[in-house]
Length: 403
Ligand SMILES: NC(=O)c1ccc[n+]([C@@H]2O[C@H](COP(=O)([O-])OP(=O)(O)OC[C@H]3O[C@@H](n4cnc5c(N)ncnc54)[C@H](O)[C@@H]3O)[C@@H](O)[C@H]2O)c1
Image (cartoon, rainbow, N blue to C red; front, side):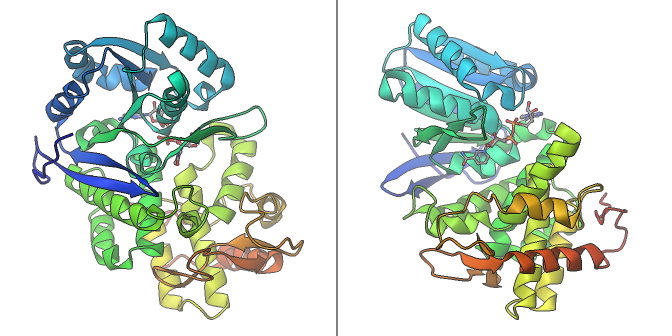
């Protein structure tokens, strides 16, 4: 596939090769670049494009892509109502049968068009068809563009839990046109940006001055800001997964904020369903708790904790627990964290990503986890709950009010 670097100008794009373990694939990104995407897809010389998407994305952006695709090859569109309900075995089974009935062959190409949900379903379909056909991602959420397409992990949910059934498959290529992100609801936009901010704090602190400037501007949906955040996410995530395709060693730093964050997300969703905090918001809050634990250990200064609060608040994420969620509720859930098994078992502590400094995780560089006592987590949560937000204009949940 040809590569070029046309810069971040409308109609142009840039490309980076994503190296993860012993695989690599090109990631193209730009503004208003769907014509270039179609040119690259033409070079795939396929007999069938299987477009896996959701009804919202199809309605908003289908017309921008499908006529051009149909000019290249046959197209089978598989669209479902948005949300996790499509990441299930019954949906996967029906989709596979449908794709085979549509005449898919080993030359067919599966395109994940949308957020991480259709992207994950597309990934599993591509991995299973004839034991693996070409997978292309066209992400339309910040979460997908800045996070899930930078991973080989493809999974659907079981009735027991999230992402329990899946495999690793590198995409053949990824194409992000940030113009497609313009239609994202604010909440979805910010959710993915919280993970991008995590990368700045935990992996690439040299980017923090620009991140703060972008946040201070409040123009988070501006294509140029998104393109920069995307570029930084690619650099950060690639740097820690280049020798860790399965994200079980150096890549574990990507779990920064996730231990308490997952617990808050789960607890709030049990209480308020889909009105609960988004994944990104919960992770952002989890970073503030992690920074507080590291501060109490004498590792991070008060200034660095305040920087966490500034960034998290400016992203509109909560600086205190969501209403109705107590420290006890979080502690009940946090014990089941999915990083169990990395460190020797202990009933009093759990494996945690903590920073010794911005961009410097504690522990072995090959396993950036440390044991944190449950009592430390509880105390840090209590401190966070009682802390006065440093930002002016924060609402009752400690969220910053942005323009
Ligand atoms: N493989 C990985 O490493 C990895 C990493 C992160 C997340 N994930 C997975 O990704 C999923 C979450 O991804 P997500 O947050 O993108 O969810 P999603 O795909 O459900 O998208 C969120 C919502 O945004 C809507 N949407 C998508 N693009 C839009 C656009 N351009 N304009 C307007 N609305 C749009 C969707 O219809 C949906 O309602 C989870 O299932 C998670 O497990 C996987």
